[in-house]
Amino acid sequence: MSGTDILTGIALVLVIEGLVYALAPSLVERLLEALRAMPVEARRTLGLATLATGLVLLWITQG
Image (cartoon, rainbow, N blue to C red):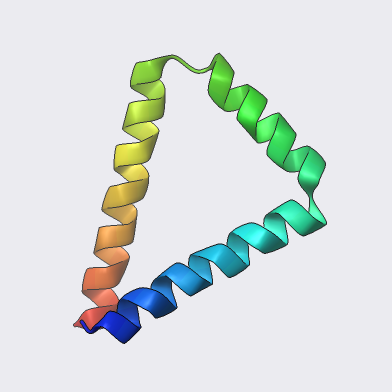
């Protein structure tokens, strides 16, 4: 994995997040409210599950 790959990944995340904020700002607000209502452990578990999913996808795509 090169530095270019990392920058490409960061750029894609920013593009997707920017689209969400531009196209559905009220959805972002509702999601943030839902996250605030979740217990810390549930947020941590969600974060770890997201991290694991991302790692698996990277592993699959990088072969």
